[in-house]
Length: 439
Image (cartoon, rainbow, N blue to C red; front, side):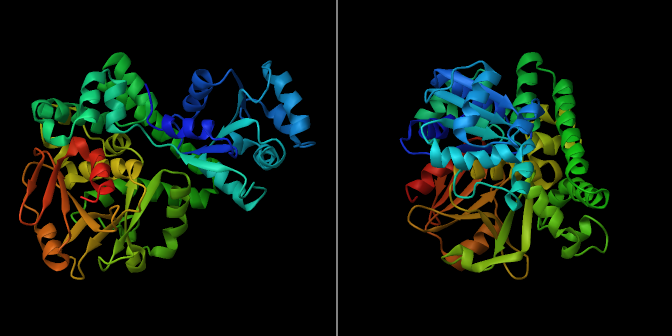
């Protein structure tokens, strides 16, 4: 499979002045594969070190972190000649605080060497309070595969090529085919190991087994990095996510985690999950005016997982849902569809995402962002083909946006006089083009 993030990796590789790069992201999103593939495709040599598998090297670095002394050690350890044409990979770098700190000295004293590192996002973040090369490294977030990447990975290369080369109004001949692929993607998700299993065997039973393996690995991390009292809070929070998203009003409520609980009981757990890239959070906007951040309500927010497939596994959504044209999109009040849209927007947009609701809570817009001309743009998610959107009507009457975006299973069209752009769910990534062009 290929990854769109390769464009960012190549931009880093080809830059004349750069700092060591750290890939961040949840476990199993493909960081190691990306680093190795970058070395294989675009460097003369690759020197790969995993500090998880090589504790002896970690102990060696306790006595020196000077590049002049480290480089011969790395060359001896890997058997690879290390030159400025070599990609040096530090994998599982959270296992070696000294290796993490050494990146500072590579940046300052040996900037001609190409160093890329990865590890548990949480593990790396924990070291920020200890020895960390502040201002001497760059970061790049790695997410699960997007829907377009999934098409490429499952052999639909020509279909993807057509989508990328044509505007969404030309997708009509492939509409039903794309919806079928999207149903499968929602269930399988974007975790590379899960997609590999699906491509290899086409078995949804085996897909679910790999998903559960990943979920169990996350669960083990709760205990590995925290004390028992805190890990129990993490599990309660984690297990509450499907029910949080299943509510009509998807605003996060602490009482749904544990009856009678308050913010102070789980705020740290939420931040821990965000630091580990397992959960993401968007805050409510009270007034749709610029700048959006000035009207951010930190006490009201929604949370999302990092992957639709893992959400289906956690909620024990059955494979029979894949065969029904609309069932998977409608499952627990459209939560999977909204999770999907969040993932696609998070991966394709550079601006922050928020949501809006009126004071009475009778109207809510799923996502709010801004375009290249600083217009505030509402994005409404509809799970099926029924395009009636009371909340969007309330928002338009109140704020008169230049245009609005509504995404559903319906075909692409523009509805006047309110200038509502209907974007098929499978083409959510195309919203970036609309926002970049100001409408």
